[in-house]
Length: 206
Length: 206
Image 1 (cartoon, rainbow over the protein chains, first blue to last red):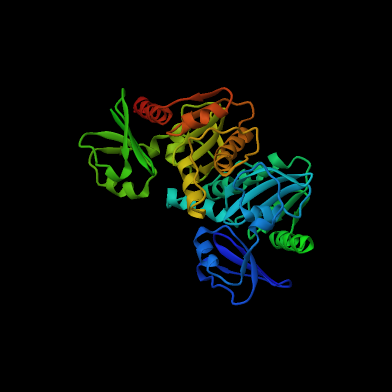
Image 2: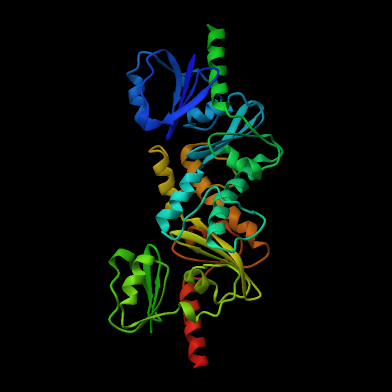
């Protein structure tokens, strides 16, 4: 069973054992059956023409008041009963789950977006997203100021929502953010686990 | 006395009475004496060729441990003894002044940068920076989620630094941010006031 998680930057594949990714520009339709979720409007057309692809979007039984919640966020939350789910990719999505119900969430620009934003404002504002940063001290130079202003807003926004709930990270930039939180958990395949759960439920219902 | 505050997006003019601005791309050297500060590397060359322009950069007596502090931030802080100074333009700079001494600060992407970042991530992420937003509720749709994630990080970052200190806003987006803070003050000409103070000190010293 091949699963595809198609985002704005990358396509992630999971064959039940191994995960791999490619740039979305290089995406080719698989020539064998596959299940997918897709948030990328440019790829959706391509997928509609596929004889093998099964869109999982309608398979998630996911009550929420949030209108227009991306299917990637639904999948990431789908195996979480209680907690704050952070998917840190080209965007950073943050979603609150309580009692198995989605209670709202938000989207921030991802780490590479922040770097780009600074570069677009001025050629002097070169932010290294991997630079070490001490969030307990006000910055005393430009390089520190930029990384501080990249990481700290994300930390403050997540801590504000979190309260006493478990914190679960996934996505390509998760490991960069993890050290700034106490008791946060990294679940690399969180989205695929959600997709697997939806498929299993569908099979059981048939 | 004509003062020019040359930023990354706009040039602001002050003739002692009136303030006006133009896009930096349209900037022409004035053909009469003027004082200026400039953080835009592309304009600096042009200014170097001017017979009339006096750069104020070296005129500020501004002790700080912060290396590479932009002269616009110095000017904005120059008349502030105690407080957090926020200049909300294409970048949002935040600087802490205590006992007349600069204690550090940081730079965030401005409101229009956040809008651009979202649009670059996905055509579905259209953020209206003027949309009303309730920061006490987790968003329940994409439009609310984007404006929440634009405004709240700025609010949290500034509140964290502020403590009990006065909060002083300037810059083109100041009025958009002001309602989210208690007892914040708007000083439209804060940068020009700093420039005027530096000129006065120089004259008194001569």
